[in-house]
Image 1 (cartoon, rainbow over the protein chains, first blue to last red):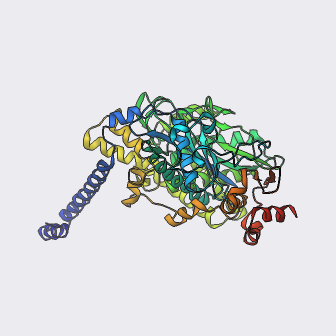
Image 2: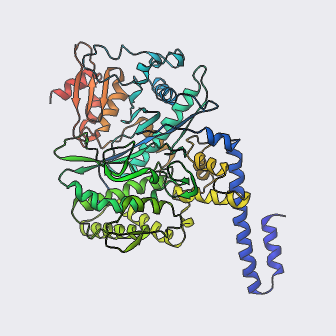
Amino acid sequence: MSEQQQRSTKKSNEESAEVESTSDIAEHKEKLDDDVDSILDEIDDVLEENAEEFVRSFVQKGGE
Amino acid sequence: MSVRRVQGSEVEYGIAVTGQPHANPMVASTHVVNSYAAAHGLTRRARWDFEEENPLRDARGFDLSRDAADPSQLTDEDLGLANIILSNGARLYVDHAHPEYSSPEVTNPRDVVVWEKAGEAVMRLGAELAGRLPGAYPIVLYKNNVDNKGASYGSHENYLMAREVPFETIVEQLTPFFVSRQIITGAGRVGQRQDGSVHAFQLAQRADYMEVGVGLETTLKRPIINTRDEPHADPKKYRRLHVILGDANCSEIAIYLKHGMTSLVLAAIEAGELTDVPQLANPVQALHDISHDPTLRAVVELFDGRTITALDLQAKYLADAQAFVERHGSDEQTDDVLARWESLLDRLAVDPHQCARELDWVAKLGLLERYRDRDGLDWDHAKLHLVDLQYHDVRVEKGLYHSLVRSGRMDRLIADDEIKDAVATPPSDTRAYFRGMCLARFAPDIAAASWDSVIFDLPGHDSLQRVPTMEPLRGTKEHVGALFDRCESATELFRAITAG
């Protein structure tokens, strides 16, 4: 079901304004969660493998 | 009064050779610099030795060509020579065990962003080319300041100031600003203390490495205010304020505001118009305490026994800067800096997460918190350290800062094309124009260059010919642009200059 369809289904099912506003908040949170998931998914794709070894082997000499 | 002032930045990059944790970082850094130079037909800077008869023709190693040279041919002597001037007026070299890019002198904070970002492009390409040398491993550069094991490398700012301002005044009036500006300019770090042994987030990468209030050192006992006094200009008129406590920022807005806010505060100090600056009881402790509290609620002690937050310290400087500008007039960039500064302080006070599109530490903290929520990670988890490090990876396809920009989650100031132009082109309104154009047009005839001179090696001359450039605002396009249009050779240019 597309997001648009979901939204209209929800809307048609809500009767009172109060319930609708609660549903808006839930929808907003859902969107935020989706966004968070998509950021982490994108970053999971580019993060170096074997974090522990990668971080351990990053040893620099002081500079300046 | 305005944010306009001669300034620039220097960034040392963290360097890693993929799969080779024991690779010599000096060699790897040298490969980055020399590979870039070779690919751009830039002769590496000759030694500062007037007795050298033919410094250019003495060139060895990677000056030949990228393909002809074998990395194993590098000797200590060659290592000492990785030090070149670019056609955009910048200096690209190896400092200790890091490749470093010093931007050309510019006249305003926005141009700092343009030419500092051009430096990232230079480093990105240099590393890529070095990784293609025969037998080489891929080299990755990080625009950050710590390895989280105790080592730190710098990203310095330089501001030209009027010599007559007493240094004690600068120290007194600037220290509380430097201690508190990290709530905007911090790049974010997983780990507290120099060696990262306390597992927690902090605002700034460099804060824990500042150990004294004032001093000359940059590599140990690092000071909040550095006293190096090397103006690279007429020392009777100018001092160069060399700032070593800042972080290397990826966010364009953070770079812009770091230089913009600081320029304005310096202008007010020069004019003697900062009043009643609150004096901190212990600036170094305050710097650490503020950095260690991402809620921005930490209070620090004042000399008179009262306490204050970083937000309130910044609000005081902002109010003074606004009043100062109101008295003396403004310009577009100054108004923009003030508006952004005010807006950020307002939003940081409500909820720092509202500034995730603009500030490095907030953007990074947002990512880290999401990983902690999703995967239930403690602050000592390697994945969080990796996110911290990889945020600064200069490769567009790997750096997490670049991921956030690409997906529209962070704002920018400068278009890609403008940065691309600045890789090859100097700013038009400082002496960097003359330096850069000499390199762009007559590289084979330039034996050396520095901030305050360009040295020609002209056919038919036994000795090198030095053209001093002691005044940062001369040698501009307006001043010498026509000469470059007219002169076909370095000899002609030199004659035209010395003829008066």
